[in-house]
Amino acid sequence: MTSAKRPIVTLTTDFGAGSPYVAAIKAAVLRQCPDAVLVDIAHTVPAFNLRAAAFMLWAGTRHFGPAVHLAVVDPGVGTERRALAVQLGESYFVAPDNGLLTMVLAESRPLVPTSVVLKRPEDASATFEGRDVFAPAAGALAAGHRLREMGEEAHGLARLRDSGPAVLWVDNFGNLVTSLRPPVMGVKVGPVTVARGVRTYGEARRGDLFFYTGSMGLVEIGVREGRADVLLQAGPGTAVAAV
Image (cartoon, rainbow, N blue to C red):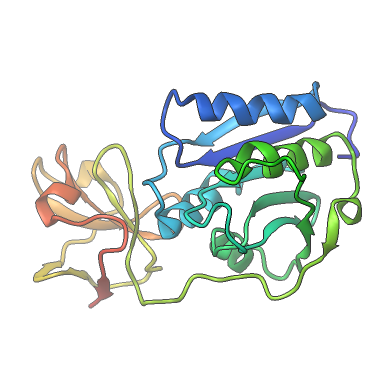
């Protein structure tokens, strides 16, 4: 990273809060770049859930300036799926080529990505490439190595299949973040139509179900002082429809 400031490396995984796997990948980054500032985006991505991970990666990294974003949600670890480093403007994303970068790539337009397939060390673990392949690459990029030094150019990055509007994420309050964008007149979730729209939570009464435009510009569904995910029995991947 060409900056006078300490380079930033963010981390997004499904390893779980307090996992020693997180400490291991941080150590691998710092081994390559001792000055790196490590920022945890999330380590509680639902296990193996690439659609939720793609959203959380985009949502958690979109406000950063130049940075290296390390993302490891990798059901295909050890298989022939590619390990990638991708440059978008002044930032880099290091991740498996399994669709994890789908939303980042879609929302980064008109920036054009430049990608390489990372070299795999001969002694890399078949079950922990996050530590042995991805983290060292992220650290090297943070330390100033150029993308073309990291491997051969890659084309045709994997994208998740678009299966229609759906819940992308459930936040800690039980609000459902959907892929719908305003304006909508209502949102259908299973047999339930959420017909009331509000600008903010305070416009609803306690227990009311409503939809609104959230801080990320996406349509969300909430319950005043309650949990929409429990009330609607919905979670990441649940289909929704604008009405």
